[in-house]
Image 1 (tube, rainbow, N blue to C red):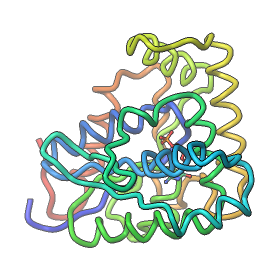
Image 2 (tube, rainbow, N blue to C red):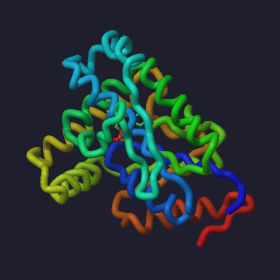
Image 3 (cartoon, rainbow, N blue to C red):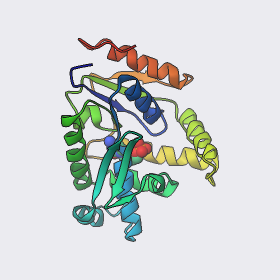
Image 4 (spheres, protein in one colour):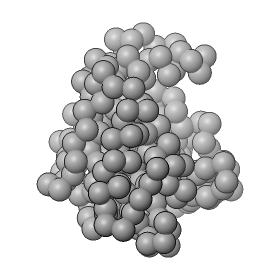
Length: 229
Ligand code: DC
């Protein structure tokens, strides 16, 4: 593959974006960027400082001091707060809810989007998030909006947490978290979650991850001059 490309994958929590995006990027031999991890790192820092993640004013004041960065390694993206690798601290239910809250603050989004655009300017990327096709990379070569029913997303997220052995929540609580974030992410004023007009919508309900990845690769193959097996 010679031409630099950008693939945007957006959609609600638990639709399978990160797994599909990672697998597609691997097939394409390009970088995968999980933008949600950046908002999660901001939420972690906010919580550690004892600030309520819903307090927009305080969060917007804090954002200048937050030093979130991404390092791209062979094993994938590593997310840092200052010098601390926080990859394993940002998947708790508290941070999930908090990330959706801090992501509604325009000052936070501006900082994160600058970093995301910088990475995409220098590399071919598959980037997943909520506003990649609509706002971060409006000229992306391919935009996918990946969705699934709320029940299926809750089931998948619950199994994932159980699989990691650290799930203390019930499936009802996991579903409530997803519904909270869906509402928050789609109704915020600044860069809400929605499909770009030119996005290809994929409903992953009832589909395996391999089927979803193949659908994405089929779309990539329609891009002029690209051929991926
Ligand atoms: O993809 P995720 O579940 O890790 O994202 C965590 C939260 O971050 C999500 O609820 C909304 C926010 N987010 C966002 O607003 N914009 C993005 N590009 C990525 C995530």
